[in-house]
Length: 57
Image 1 (cartoon, helix red, strand yellow):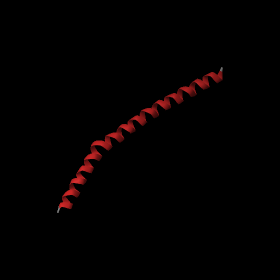
Image 2 (cartoon, rainbow, N blue to C red):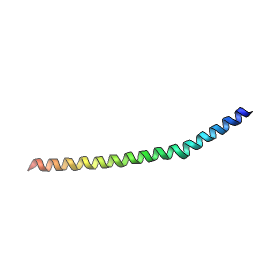
Image 3 (cartoon, helix red, strand yellow):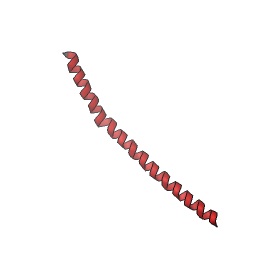
Image 4 (cartoon, rainbow, N blue to C red):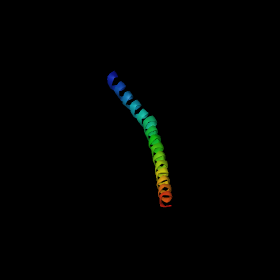
């Protein structure tokens, strides 16, 4: 009986850790990666536009 109780408590604690710590951490990392990707895209577009305009002159 003690093993079953400890298994249930361990499972609940594991779910608590996953939903309260790991999922927000992953969401934050995804948000940071998205921001970095958008900034990189803007820099790429700016370099491409400047490169084409300076080549045409």
